[in-house]
Image (cartoon, rainbow, N blue to C red):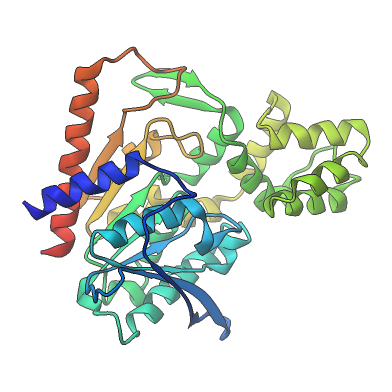
Length: 355
């Protein structure tokens, strides 16, 4: 019964999502020793006057807000209120929006450092990661720093199976579902992350003479300094200026798509290292996979593929909200069924992690 109650409370709290007003918990800023030997920030969320033994480590996605991301803290505070001590470590390369092997090295290292804490029982630890962080956590789980004392389970929210098809989606917005193709508008942040990682490998005649300025503008956009972005953009000639605006607004024409795709296709080592498509069958941990069908950063079809690749996985795709381009007019009965499926998924999740 208690897992049913937890599931209902979790779903109810998610439905009341408000990143500016999350549940009241204690938030303590501490640190761990990073890969570089320096103190690296982490946040610990706990319930007042409670000594919860179950620990949830939540790894962030690619965001300069890192462990202070409001959406992440909202999720973390909900889980905390359900009886977990929640630990959110900063992953420096992800804070800088870097997607490479350094990320999962940091994931494995941070996990190992957290297990060394006096207030953590390694037998009561679970983990989860958001967006691009999910694929990175899955890769890190194969590292002996995690595999020797694995978490009870891994949860991914909106992550990818194949980094190549995910990056392709950010360029063309195409989702293939049930032998049909739909085109939606991908999230502009995803394309900004992509451009940030591949800028030096892309050969656009529109920006070839302004790469220094473009790099500065991209960095400002990453830091959300929108006024400075606008000011710097206005200093560029019309063609490179319009090019950058199209990148930030996810308005990709066929020429830009072709150049980006060509650059990505050449990064075979990067693609294979980053993509669970190539090594997901080696994961022995229990993996819970959740994805919203309206996700415009990573298409939900990636989680469908991921669940087929990982043998010990449970999948929940929420079709409660869909892209208007592929939505059908579903009524109240459909929504009740969707709610029930979500309820069963999270009931199973909490029971698995606490038994």
